[in-house]
Length: 113
Image 1 (tube, rainbow, N blue to C red):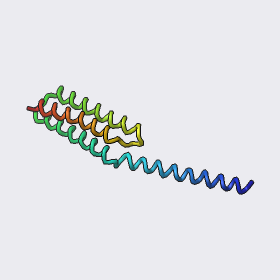
Image 2 (image 1 turned 90 degrees about the horizontal axis):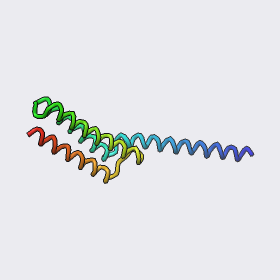
Image 3 (image 1 turned 60 degrees about the horizontal axis):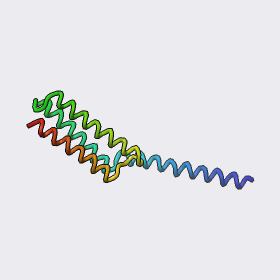
Image 4 (image 1 turned 90 degrees about the vertical axis):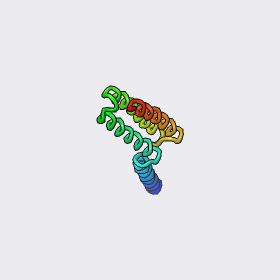
């Protein structure tokens, strides 16, 4: 009986080690996955662009609020997509998010000119 118990303890211990490695890996994946980094950097750049155009008077506060709201929707979608698949987004999801950002970018340009 002692051997079976020892074997069980070893198996359980290994399961915890492997499970812990997966959790650590997921945390790293979430923070540094290239597709998420690219989308989030683009969101940050667009946010700065909206704020610059608002500060320079090229767009109104209402236009800025609308653009920020649309960007917030893209950010929410990115987080939702990542939550479904081990904290990363697929190429198709990245493409879709970037298409949404392209449309918002065009709005910023049109509103500012």
